[in-house]
Length: 236
Ligand code: SF4
Ligand code: SF4
Image 1: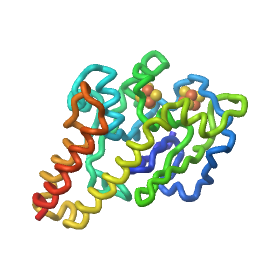
Image 2: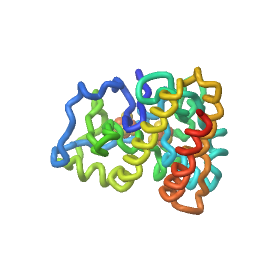
Image 3: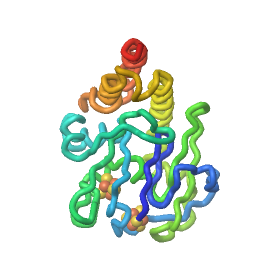
């Protein structure tokens, strides 16, 4: 599979190019006639699976471990080099073994299924959130896999997959990441002498400064309230 990275508000795997505008979006009432066959193909040769803070938090809560520990065991951190992720700290699931399988693929099934990341819950759909309006759109990634689900609507699919329940948080995540990327770029990006400390502090606020005993969203809001003025001071 030719996986490509998605940015904040752009979640997708498979053959999806970063420019999803070229893909036809589905209306909420549209039929999305898909049921997963459980073949596990979308979990193999995975090098692109970008996590949001909520994704990491949900996995950490499932494993009853701190998010930073889960990240050090299963993820690779980097700084976004292109597009909407430019200058942002980005966490990806680190592939395992010569086949580059997802580290949570266990005997053909997902070991963290109930806490799987958004991109996995969506698949084979991709999601695009407009950070200005908060509007989410969904587009099928081709070729479609799976079997027929007997006329299920897109809205029902999103509800069944747990995507609808987390949408409000995912919209706020897309907005925050877009704002932070803009701040880092406006300060000169990597040319700013305080860029790396700013990125490290951002990474903590987006991904690690959470306890799994409490809900994610209030902690995220608090982290952003502290981070944004702090970044302005760090970056000068
Ligand atoms: S997290 Fe689970 S569903 Fe997602 S790629 Fe890994 S094994 Fe597959
Ligand atoms: S989503 Fe598709 S590729 Fe992934 S396990 Fe289900 S049928 Fe297979």
